Amino acid sequence: MFLSLASAALLGAAQVRATFIPTVSGTPQLIGNVSDPTIDRDSCCSARFGSRELWTCRDSQPYANGVPTLPIYSSSASWTEFSSDGTPLIQSWTDAAGNTETGLLCSGDNYEEPFFPILADECDTNTAGACSDNTRYVIWPNSPPLVTSEDATTGIIEAFTWITEAHITDEFVTLVADPAATLYQITYDPSVNGDSTGLPNVTTVQENFWTTDQMPYGTYGGVVVDDVAYLYGQNAAGTVALAQVAVGSVTDKSAYQYYVNGEWTSTIPGVNDTDIAIANAGAGGQGTFYYSSVWGLYVWIGQAGISIAPDFYITTAASPEGPWTEPTNFYSAEYVTESYTLQAHPGLLANASENAIYLTYTVNLAGEYYTPLIYVQWES
View 1 (cartoon, rainbow, N blue to C red):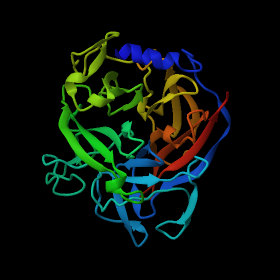
View 2 (view 1 turned 135 degrees about the vertical axis):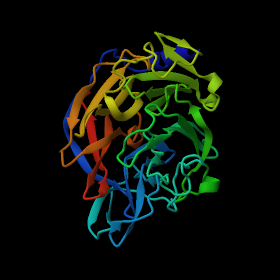
View 3 (view 1 turned 60 degrees about the vertical axis):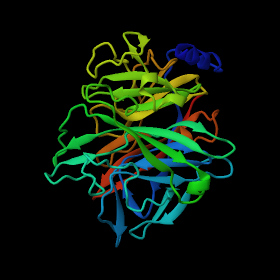
View 4 (view 1 turned 90 degrees about the horizontal axis):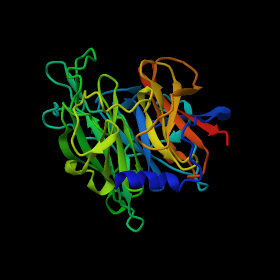
C-alpha cells in the first residue's frame, strides 16, 4: 500500500524529474532576522500551522537589562504571522538592547518552561536538564514538527516531533553515541490555545520510542505525502535510514515499515545495520526534508556534515527512498562566525506553486543567538 501511495503522488505531479538540481534565480535576499525580542534562542526550525508558522527552538533564555539571563530552558516555541497576500509578515521592532530590528517577529507565551517536557530520568528538577554531576540531558528539537492532520472545521492541528535523549558532558562530549529517542505530540486547538500568543499543548507519547539499538527515525526529518509519513533517521556514523507509517498510526510502533536492502519490511533493523543506508539523503549535517509540488520531487536542504559555514546544500529525489542526487551547494550566506542549524522553511511560501524557498541558519555573536532569514527564488 505504501509504495503505491508514493508512486501516486508522483504520477499526479505536473512534472517529475528523476535527477534534478535547481538553479538559483537572481540574488537571494536577506530579509532580516527571526526573533522574539524577549527571548534569546538557539537553533530554530518551523512548520505551517493553519494561518501561522510555528517555530520550535533549542536552548532559550529571557533577557534582562538587554542581556540574556537565567533560566536556560532547553526548548521554546513561537508563532510568526502572514500578510493578507500570503507572504510572511515582515515587521520592525526594538530588540532587547534598544536597537531596531527587522524580519519575522515571534510571539508566544513559554513561561520560561521547556516546550518539549524534560522527563523524570533526564534531570528534570530544572528547565535545562542539568544534572548534579555536571552532565546534561539536552532535549533539543533537530527537525521541524511533522504536521499529520488539520481539521478545517475545528482548526485542530496535530503534529509530532522525535527528539533524541542526548546526554552530554560539560565539554559537549556525548555519553551515548546513539541515544534513544522520545516521541512528542503537538496539539493546537484554537478553542483551548486561542489565536494569539497561546502555544500548542505538548504531550509525551513515549519515552524510548526508538531504543539505543534502533535508528532514531524522524529525528533527522520527515515529510508527509498522501497521508503517509516518511521519517528519516541518522546514526552517529552519519548513516541516514528511512521508515514510513500512515499518519493515523504514528503513535503505533507496530504499524511502521522500514526500508532495508531496497525493500520495505516490518522488521526493525539495527541502528548500525549496513543495508539501511539511503545514499545522498542529506549532506550529513542538519537540514529539512519537504515535498515540492512545483518540481514533483522530494527535497532536502541543509548543511554539510563537517562544516561551520552557512553553505546550503540541496538534493532531490522522485521518491522518498531515492535515488537522491549528489548534494550540491546552491547558496552560501556571508560568513560572520560559526554557523549551524541550516534550515529550509516551505511553510513560509505563499502557496504550493511558488517556485522559491525561505532559509535560516543560526549564529552566535558575543553570547547572543541570531537567525537570519533569506529568500531564494528558483529558475523555472
